[in-house]
Image (cartoon, rainbow, N blue to C red):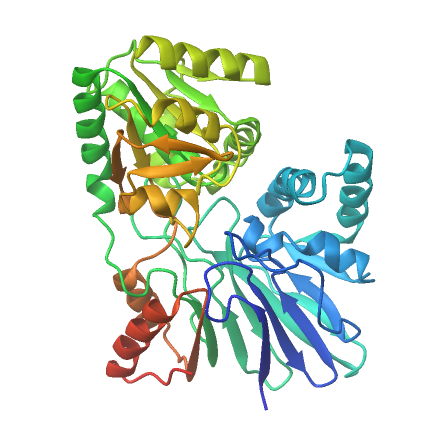
Length: 440
């Protein structure tokens, strides 16, 4: 009998951690941190003796953030992921360890060095045999592109009885210009499927740049800055890609400064450029035309904290136009907080939310239209114009999720929904059942 124990993200959007039991052995698929104001203690609160290996679907912190705690609990097995995920992992974990534990750089380096010795990379499309010594048997693991972020993977696990258990991880939307579309498995006897936007239909991906252009043009008429709280990995690169194209088409002035104010986002963007082989055909074509969609001249990176403060103060004093892309995406910390504290009271300011905002976060409050918010204990009047653009979501919407399942040629015999709130899971389950699938 197949048993999957969920140690996170069964009915929530963050903290993915799923244990696939295989007799007396088990595999852990992701080991993520819960995020938002209601996040739980990250300590590992389940037995790990039977865990033979960890499989990472991608590098977002809500899928990998508890790895340091897993190592501290005594896990010494292999950690499998794609090469791009392995490259991104230390960037995100370093930031997380600094924020959650306040560790010094030497301590962080020690943890990352230990993790690096346990990581084994696996490219898309290759079957890898994993030994299960307690069962005196093997299972096989294969990754395919998930289209969510660089290196994200849909995971197939073939068991000794030839049954295949598939974990979607986080699935990206179709037709995004930077990364290829998700590739569903040809067969899945049991599918663990994310449901973040199981009750939503996103804006048309093809039209998102048009709406972004309209907001930019409106902002330029009013003056003031455009603030985009963006996740350092995925969303930032998609935004830069579209902004470069608007400049190339002369839809946006080539004098408008684009300020990338997130040290991690800068490093992640370098990784995206290094793994160009994983880009979509459209993105590769632009590069072959000697364009640099993630490193164009107008994109100015803000390095040190002093420079960051100077930019914040200058924009607050002058009201001059600029596009600022800064972390964190849910406005729960990071450099974006200084911009919001100074510029939210200015009606010339535009704030664009381009990703999911967890309940009880500052981003959620702003998106829901609160007229006052608190930042670092100070009450801030909100007079800025707030925009939400679901076309930049890194997650598939309901239509894409249903299409993903229907493209699986054999199966799935059973679907279990995870990584979604109750309403999203309930509505998606209803749609899947109407198509004849068994949903648990």
